[in-house]
Structures are given as C-alpha cells and as structure tokens.
Image: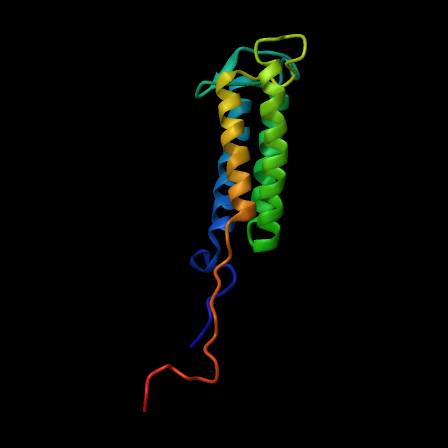
Amino acid sequence: MASRPDSDPTSKHPSQLLALAIGAVYTLVGLLGFLVTGFDNFAAETNKTLLGFEINPLHNIVHLAIGLAGLALWRRLDTARTYGWLLAAGYGLAFLYGLFAAGNSDINFLSLNGADNGLHLVSAVAGVAIALWPADRTVPRQGGVTGRGA
C-alpha cells in the first residue's frame, strides 16, 4: 500500500488546513487592500474600507505578512501550530489595541474600526484552535490479537 505524498491535502491535519485557509485569505485581503488604499496615508486613519473593514497601507502589509506566514507554515503540523500561536497572540493583542484605537485618530495607526475588532477576535480564536486541535490518536493492537476467540 503506497502512502500519500506529504503534499496531499487529504493527509493533512485540520490545523494545517485551517492555517492554509487563513493564510490564503489574509494574503488575498492584503493584496486587494492595496487596490482600495493605494499607498496614501500609510499609517493613518483612512476611512477606506474593504468589505466593511477599515484599512490603510500599513494594515495591508500586516495582512500580507500574516497571510504569507500561514502559506509558509501550514505544511507541517508543528509549524502550523506555531502559526496558530502567532495568530492567537498577534490578533489577541490587535483586538485589545483596537478597543482603544478604533475611532481615536491620535493612536489608530492601523486604521481599525469595530468590524476589524470582531475579525481580530475571531482570528485569535482560530489561532487557538489551530494551536490546540487534538492530534489523532490511535492505539496499535498488542501482539496482533483481535480479541476474538479461536
């Protein structure tokens, strides 16, 4: 029986697939964000939104970095779990920062709004899921005994 190649997505742990999906989405959002913002007001409130989420060029770069990290780290379970912890910590902090920054142009260098805060909280929870999703555990049979009488 041939084993599946390591690149076969059907052989991947759900944590890895979630890391891949989140990485792909954030990479796409980062790229699309530049179509909306260009490079003006790099680290300032812009009132420009993508699907209701406020963005600026710096915010787009953060999305690209998070997305590309997911695309780079999804292939192995240990690196996918590391990505999960990075998401949990980074977006947990971004959520807390956003609670104070949204609507306060003096400190809102990422141009965050309430929708961003909600997404950041969901992303942090997804990171915890990636990091802590239980690995499949199988117990090998002892001595080939099936438990049936002869």
